[in-house]
Picture (cartoon, rainbow, N blue to C red):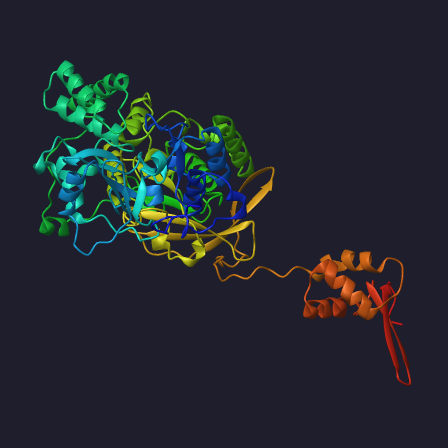
Length: 616
């Protein structure tokens, strides 16, 4: 009996056949392969315990391949079929444990709603699309006998338990959005059933991606409110146990210690808590504004934020490093004046220290910067693998500076220091707000490297550059983008978007190598960006000469035969072959190919051979 999603009911008479390689295998194996074909992530589940038989965390982010599924089936022939739920697969499942729970839950659904439904041994599974702009994991008892499965969850799928799981409405039916009434119900019961704990963001608290920051903030609130540290620790331990997934209790002590240090810093004035400094407009009109402390002339000032944005592997980290070196030693960076040398803190999260070291040496060598030029102005931290994220991670860095007071702080890249999802505006606001706070506390300019989304960066306006939430584009004071050049693969187009200074024209830079490597302004190259409409440069005709010589050998050949063989070897069109022959036989020295014609009454033949003389 063959089993295929989307055909209900499945019987021996109407079950459609699968591909030949699946014929003869069990119903569950066929179903597992068909789910995989449909894009659903399949994992084997123990029939007695309902627990996964394989380590499945990676499959929360990527779908198992068909070969992996076949391997699961071979290793665990009696296993039930599990389908992983969550945002990655746009799948959210409501689990009703009984007929009564199902009927009660129906009251929350619109009468006209049609969705995929599975009959389970005791109740029902209802399949929805994953809700947008919120994060939901796994929850129980949103109403009696009703649970849900989102990120980090899975459900058992038909025909598990010897057919006890079966489709009532097939999985080809479009999965509808989760109704607002259900989302509200989930919110209201998320925190011990407290109806007043709702709100647009409650579903994110103490979940993976932000639990670290939430527990740290809770610790700060408790300590700043005068709470005894022992009691505060106990409260954080309770929050840690109830996080999703649970937060390591051994790290709770570190949170309390960090909160205590922060409170001590506040007492001695390192963290300002002064009243707001309102100014009367009339008074401001009677005095000259302060002269800005420009880090890069007419680009940004001390205390500003600047983004460096480019596609993956577009040398943006090299670009930032060269900029920081120039700022540290007071040299102009490309077209911009640096005014004076500055103290710079550079935090690199992506590459190991050995590679940062190599890059530093090569860039400094290329722009003739020596240790005497840098003095003690550039401090570098290789933060890869140190677990530095969010507010607490940044504060750990600042507390470790031991007297070094940076005027520029650079994070490379942004997504490594951020917590939560870069597509979520609320998550990005937390990071960007702390950058504001850090700039106010230290007076430093904040730099960060960010990446472009997929697609052609040259097609986008500079205001639309940068992956994830567009809140980033509305936040910075200055932005420098790198875009691949339309014609020169070693060049890029530099564009600038400024909040506080006049617009600047884009210009081209060229990546140069030799004794080290660096960017140099290329005034002889037009700043033409590569877009999705950019046509690739034509391959020089001279590259096809070896093919022609290979076809001809040392013999003369009839031209028609040559064209046929040359076309097979070169894969050129007839027009391109005509262009090639016109170029190769055009005369001059050397002449690459030579033609010879024989004419007579009713006779015309043309031959071709290798040669260096004029046409014969």
